[in-house]
Length: 212
Image 1 (cartoon, helix red, strand yellow):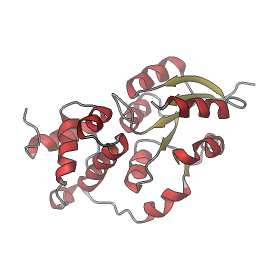
Image 2 (cartoon, rainbow, N blue to C red):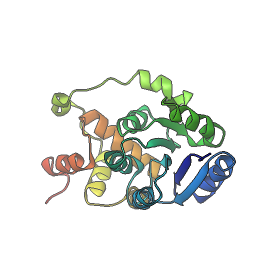
Image 3 (cartoon, rainbow, N blue to C red):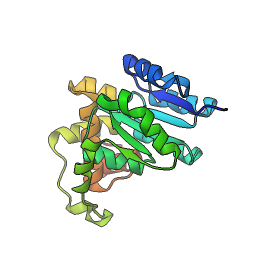
Image 4 (spheres, helix red, strand yellow):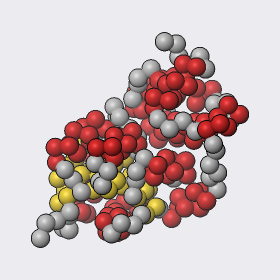
């Protein structure tokens, strides 16, 4: 009987090694990659059934990678793992096509059950994220001009990302974590109803954050 093929994407080698050990008795782990662009290449080459990916990865973040994957392979199952329980990230992950969202501290214990759930056509989110999800209100795009202005730190993050730096490069430049960079980015995107990195660049140009 063919086993479910799983591709793991995270730049924390100890974590992916641990996840591989947990999954291998039941699933076929077909590859381990450490950045978003390697994830796209490996997904096309290895044709996994399920992809387990971090959100904040070098070169191309997990959310943008997921959108590209879903365009090419709509039926693929995407499971996000992250340290950050922020509800805006959870919302953005499911908008990007996720079937499940797990916090890293529960990944080893919860991932097998999450995979089973998504293979049956269901979804899963860590209990710690569910309450925050209930408190998010959707804002229509027309409300973008009336949304709160980004903070000074958020503008710094927007500028560096719009200039082409990866989340890791931005984190190194600003001396913050990749997860903080991701939080700033997706908080701004949610507030302004910006749905892609291209729209974020357009916003940065229009508002003088970067120049062409």
